Amino acid sequence: MWVSAFSPWEALTYAAVALTGYIISLCAYRVFFHPLAKYPGPLSYKLSGWPLVWQAYKGDRHIWHLLDHDKYGPVVRIAPNTLSFNTTSAVHAIYGTRTANVKKGEWYKTFDIAAGTYSSFTETDREKHAIKRRWMAPAFSTESVKANEPLLINIIERFCESLKPEGDGWGAKWNAHQMGVYLGFDLMGALVFGSDFKSVQEEGNRDLADCVLPAQKLLYWLSYLPVASLVRPFLRSQLLEIVGGKPVRDNNRLIDYGKAQVQARRSNEDNEKGFNDAIDFLSKLAYNGDKKTGWQPSSLDLDTESLNMIIAGADPFSQVFTGTLFYLVHNADCLKKVTSEIRSTFASPSEIVSGPKMNSCTYLHACIEESLRRLAPVPSHVPRVVLPGGTTVDGTYLPPGTVVGVPQYALHHNPAYFAAPFAFSPERWLPSSSNPQSAIDEMRRAFEPFGLGVRGCIGKNHAYAQLKLSLAHFLWRFEIRECEGEKGVGCGRPGLGTGRERVDEYQLWDALGAVRDGPVVEVKWAW
Ligand code: HEM
Image (cartoon, rainbow, N blue to C red):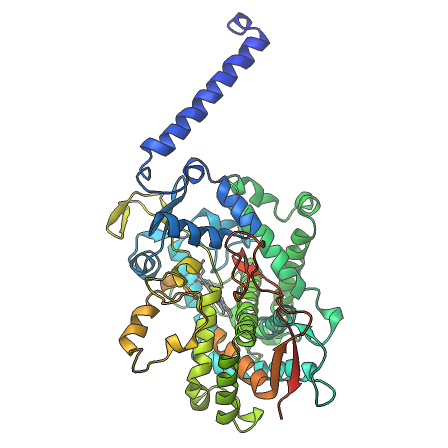
């Protein structure tokens, strides 16, 4: 009866009016009455989360964070419910304190769920995460780093061997980004699975290593979709393989490789009886649980964690290894200093191991720190959600449900903390009469390439060991230069996009890690 009071046309008109009214009220609420209404930011960010999706899709989020902080100040509203801070006090309040009333939120849930469950990286429940972190700690201890070192050195030496030119002159050109990806994957394959991928040496073996970045890029922008929760259940489906294409298939291939490895461990009786002395992470994790609670990992936990470790470990390593080479070939003085330090410290490659001699290479360490600062390997805001009861950041109360974060790239280039922030200057990390230790300590508070606190990087010790060993072995053996005729690959340039004009800056396209290219280099045996 009631329905017949309206013609279809009238019903459609009323529905359109109601929808328009709803959208106008929502916009007005978000701009004028929302609890975050007082914070500055572009109008488009206040109205909707779609600008973030677009920035994530384009890989430019970190650049927009930096530009927005330059324009609007230390706190910017980057989405209706999200604030970005650019201060040391905020980074410690949000990530660094065990008592911070925040947790990882829904955003993380898209990443490795296709493998079956949440990993230590994506688990949002604080208790469950603490269990996983205790379970994984032995694999990431200092002893474990030392025990794995011969394995890593073997892979690094093979990497150097495969780059060695035939004669005394300069060898064939190679793309440092690509070779860095293969080295990173080979190192992590050995650590996580005990596998010898040989992706550096054999082109036919590069299939899996080539999967990491495209898969990460896809998951990154998908995770920002306002409808991400609707997409998640389909991540492992054939439908998404058709719609998402190669990146989805790549992600699934990585998962399948991990699953096969887990199954091999699970069906190995020696392993089960504890007879296997393999030191790879998976062997360590497969038959150990959390001693405190008695929790034991399921096969799904292992599938997911192995995927997580290979991605979380391989890509940032490659990024920093290649990025350091980029900044060294573009800064001849730094290259000269670091090579002479390495060659005068170690008499031969067989001496290049972790220990007092490596620790004495302070310039090498400073070059790595400076690359970590410039690259900011996880360059954008990684979000935390405020829990019931709210929290206070930089003197302002934030209500429960607010999403907060500090973008690494913006913080690492904040002139309030780093003088000449776009200069590559390892010297800033070394004490001298004009650079007292107290100033370095203060600067270090704004330096967070591995994150901070309970959700900070569990692989930090492994990462430093891998970076130092790889760079020291490589630079001991080789002279390196950018290839004539291929100069500028990886550099910024006018016309490349907003914020990408600096010619001496290694360009990253943010994908939680980062897509990048070059430099194209050639090497010569140094001895
Ligand atoms: C240069 C190398 C590396 C950098 C810059 C880096 C950076 C980071 C950052 C910033 C986070 C926190 C992310 C967040 O809050 O969302 C993180 C977490 C993590 N990283 Fe790394 N990482 C590196 C190497 C590694 C390696 C080698 C491994 C494994 C062997 C690893 C495993 C992990 C794991 C498992 C987490 C999650 C920790 C948790 O939430 O408990 N990372 N990493």
